[in-house]
Image 1: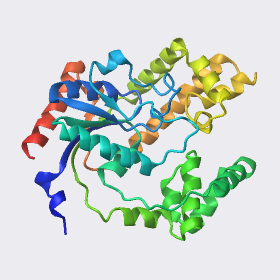
Image 2: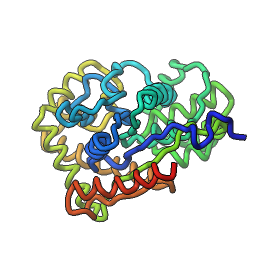
Image 3: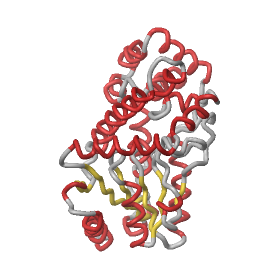
Length: 321
């Protein structure tokens, strides 16, 4: 039974702009915020960290165009930060924006953040086991990630099928949950969905009919990051020994370069390749959600036409309550 607080007319309206990296999410979110008196709440798992600005494509002050942005650049890379932390902080931000009579606009490509927040997933309070995490990470380094994937497949086949081997942190987390609680991550996710969502969401997804156009944008963005000083930013971030930087695209690719094992051009190509692969994974994630209203960026002659198409979707959503 849905409580009074979660009846449709009392649910908080939240717009969201999702999609792959370099598709124009941040830009469109700002354009919509300017038209609907909104504020942007970031849903990017890397833009939360301080000191990692260029490589995570944080919007500049000029790009924000006076629109307030939240949950960007506020966590030290050495500080653990979970999905549960994000959901809690995003809920506070959205409630505050709504209380001021403005429209919260979620913007970002971290699908787990977006889904967990909009679906109001409830997370348990179990303690972390840092020693176990360290042991599992060391095992992955010595024996390979596949060893952990095989273990996870035995205890939680659903999570093993859902998680990508490259996402070592989530694989370790899934094993940690089982060993510390006796429940699988899949069971916890099912349990977390028992509370109805207090949000009335409209999700707009950006994609491209011609995938090569998206890849060209990714390549161009990486070149712009290099020109803006990504090499020095990566050097400083990696020098701090932050595990976050050592796992992040745009940073970890510099490690062999700083060790003299590859050229700068090879670093650039590796970043572009890894970013393209990440974009494919993002699209796979968001396409699982049948509620996304997809717009193909290359289907419109210019940005103004794209914004108009997004406005049609938002206007219909607002009219329908």
